Length: 336
Ligand SMILES: Cc1cc2nc3c(=O)[nH]c(=O)nc-3n(C[C@H](O)[C@H](O)[C@H](O)COP(=O)(O)OP(=O)(O)OC[C@H]3O[C@@H](n4cnc5c(N)ncnc54)[C@H](O)[C@@H]3O)c2cc1C
Ligand code: FES
Image 1: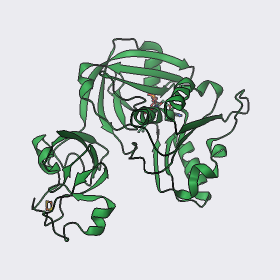
Image 2 (image 1 turned 135 degrees about the vertical axis):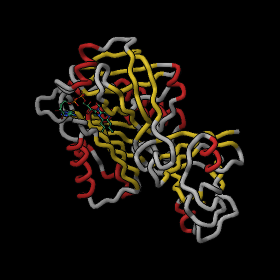
Image 3 (image 1 turned 45 degrees about the horizontal axis):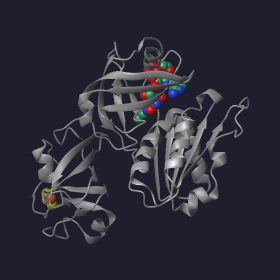
């Protein structure tokens, strides 16, 4: 039996390896061309210490307290020269990918669907046989090359990978390089290259209620996460607040409705900031965060959107005097 182990490197690169039953993570990585930081290989030096974000595993019995203390083991630290996976795992490696002799993977695919959901938002899907090999954690992103240029733009997956196809939700930035390509030139069958997956904004094991806060196309990583949650279920409540600027920015509401029907513990609300909006709920996402959503701090908050929105929401949560158990965010910063 093999397990999929995601290795998240310090520079944001993620590589997935297969770990066989009884095989140490260090050996599995080495077999697949990745040299994790390592020295004694005996559980004595601690040079291979990493952090296990999720999954079940055996820590091994051969290591000494100097290499990994009991307190560290309880927090989730592991020695990869000793650890054996007992389920799929996510491991944070405190080194850059190139130091470990690896790098982000590149793929070639073709546009399978491109359509404007509204004047401000584009849905893009790409597909290829090679994307069947593309594993990522829901919430992560890739760098897509803008066809006909040497420029790349970062986009979060808005779906899981299914039959070699993945989706994206993209804001139409007037005059933007990728935006112009997608709105005026792109057609089904066009070739695109991408590199990744990347990023530390991904769904962790759900151990407490989740509050998901999306601004504009910052909804994309959440629809990927919700697909995963719909598959695996959640015993904890999940609430999404989706805020946009104008009525036409409000897209994928049917998708959210379908998630609410599929995921018993999931609820959501949306709001539009523009005073001209005809949408019943006006204002910013912060106006719709209720004390029960913050659950006295026993909550994992995920926040994604344009940088000013991420800043404003972070400040608002700090001002409530509540420290969420975990606070993850992604800023959709412009590349230029
Ligand atoms: C980690 C990460 C993930 C991302 N994921 C997504 C995603 O899933 N969906 C998505 O829509 N975007 C996402 N972005 C933003 C995306 O990478 C591009 O920056 C955006 O799509 C603009 O690309 P463009 O080529 O159309 O415009 P560009 O040619 O890059 O920009 C044209 C002009 O518009 C300005 N500009 C660019 N973006 C904005 C903006 N958002 N608001 C105001 N002005 C802007 C630029 O400064 C420049 O002057 C992500 C960014 C990061 C860093
Ligand atoms: S390499 Fe020394 S403890 Fe693992």
